[in-house]
Length: 108
Image 1 (cartoon, rainbow, N blue to C red):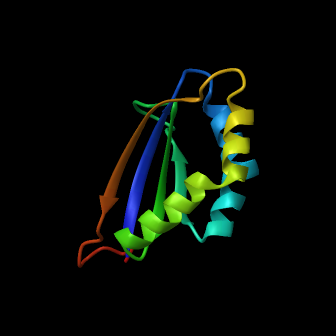
Image 2 (tube, rainbow, N blue to C red):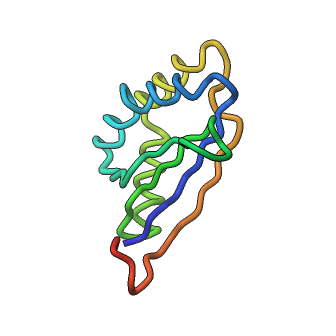
């Protein structure tokens, strides 16, 4: 199992709209495509109070490429994204990293 860590740095004031889009639309679309979220976080204390951190679980990079491409092409995703960004973009920057658990990790 590999994990994709994604950090979305929102435009100030737009984090609530991004969270709503995830809760109301993105998660359902991901479920349809077999994308498995491992967790979501916002910053309680520290830098990045406009950031959403989340992780996705993948069996392989090939699985990620196939499922992510299908999700990105889904008209339901385009509609949800476009509707949520009528007043302007929500995200200023996206960072992504692929992580492999260590032998002693409690998460495999």
